[in-house]
Amino acid sequence: MFPTLTIADIPHHEGKSVTLSGWLYSKRSSGKLAFLQLRDGSGVIQCVVSKADVPPAAFETAQRIGDESSVTVTGTVRADKRSALGFEIGVTDLTALQEARDYPIAAKEHGPAFLMDHRHLWMRTPRQRAVLGIRATLIKSIRDYFDSRGFTLTDAPILTPAACEGTSTLFEVPYFDLGKAFLTQSGQLYGEAAAMAVGKAYVFGPTFRAEKSKTRRHLTEFWMVEPEVAFMDLAGDMDLAEDFIVEIVGRVLEKHRKEIAGLLERDIAALERVQKPFPRITYTEGIERIQQARPETPITWGDDIGGDEETILANQFDRPVLMHHFPSAMKAFYFKHDPTDDNLALGVDVLAPEGFGEILGGGQREDDYDTLLARIDAHKLPREAFGWYLDLRKYGSVPHAGFGLGVERTVAWICGLHHVRETIPFARMMERLTP
RNA sequence: UCCUUGGUAGCUCAGUUGGCAGAGCAGCGGACUGUUAAUCCGCGGGUCGCAGGUUCGAGUCCUGCCCAAGGAGCCA
Image (cartoon, rainbow, N blue to C red; front, side):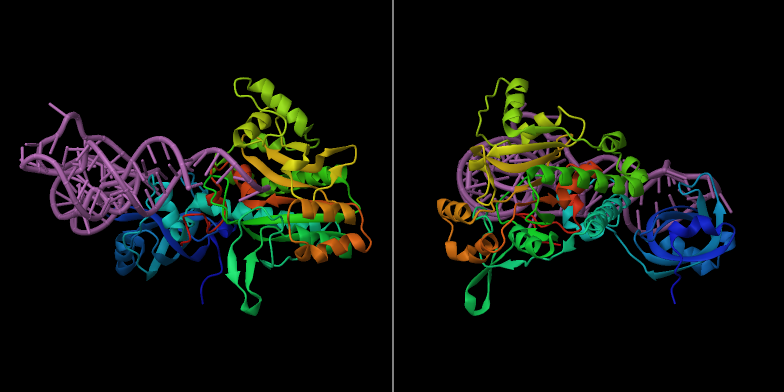
């Protein structure tokens, strides 16, 4: 029987004798005294082993064991100002479950390649543990947001018959006698079908992109949440995106304020400013703003807004900015075009502040059968693959809209992390399939 | 796929004009009863990414390849 007490609960047990199990995070020792930093996933506490207070074998164990050895410690909880937690354990006994040697990760500087090679161990460090916890809270906040507002979770398949958008490169897998299947790059089209069934739907799952993207904002496998709502236009979609982001950032901040400000040393004020209303600009206004801010490198209407341009725009505001009405040529076939200007698509992107880039993209979908069919032909997509999708426009079509939010980019923004590889337990990237 | 910068001890890096392979940290042994990246003494540790080439001699110069980091394109 192992103790159920965790380090996080220690402040409620002052003066009592407790037993804790965990891992040796670090150790300093002198001749008759050893300071063990014990880690159990809920926190870290200093355990003081005095030679006079423990059996000789326990003291020898304390002197001998290396970092990340698994141990069970018994001792008295006492308040101590010198401890970071405010408490420490005066150890009366200690046993090692397994004695570790030569733990590769030191409390020193390491390069990203080394850390990613040791991701299975790196995730034990307090900083990484905090990021994983924040990711978990963000995902719960996302689910709670939709679950409490009448949305129904409608999981989309991961194995799909064809490209959803026909653009990105897809991962191929053999599929019995049916030939090839592909890993999904978006659940959106299925989300649209679900919205026609349940009204408000959301898809939440992993997504795969086989593009050879090698940047700090890209993973080949990432998680995306994609709400889709029947009877919603672009304006409603933007309101939803704004309300959603305010809510989920607020929830994470509420629970993890100390870790974000302390361990992650992130500017909390920047997150506190994430309040309604967000600035809203059209793509056209965005291009004008970039031209003014950076006259030396011309940009013209119709150009893509790349990473540098996103940062220029984001830096002009103190909170996320909604950019909408993009050139229709830039967007996928399913976007509804502006009824007053066919060159514009009713899409919206959200750029996170401080150069963290695009975290959300969405818009109003084309709901007219003939228009959508013509669009599929114009994009040279196989009609037969979209038969079921076209059906949605044949049987009770309604205006509808939705968006996709990238979980990893959102975590990177909230945590102030430079690279998305730290925001997922085990990152999959172009050059990395292990651990 | 393209561009840039890298690859030297377990880790982070230095290595001059081509002339004996180095430091800090980690590890191991020892000392120390209040340490916070403890301190002090001692010790071990190398396929200089790989394969060729030039040279009396290559970590250093040349060619090819592999790998990594950052960026571009594409995207969330």
